[in-house]
Image (cartoon, rainbow, N blue to C red):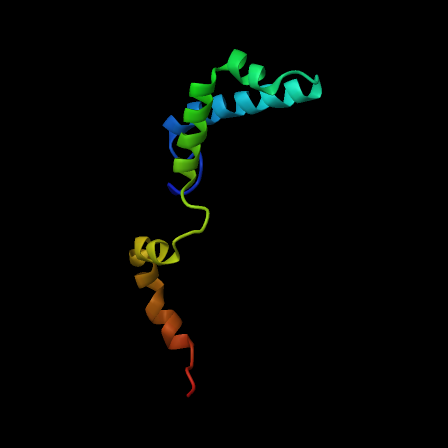
Length: 93
């Protein structure tokens, strides 16, 4: 799994677990018609929740992938099969 995917590094799992726990606390509070702000505060505190969201967003990368950067990062892989692909394709015009 590459760095663009959440959970690609083992050290990201604790952050994801923390965020998931906060989300579960929100869901449980909503289901019980309880105060959502209090649910986060009592479960983990807003500071930790916000940090977990920010770290998860950073690990996930941009919402719109940078296709040029992705292509450049895979240059060595593409270089291996590109000659065969270009030989198999006929260009007209």
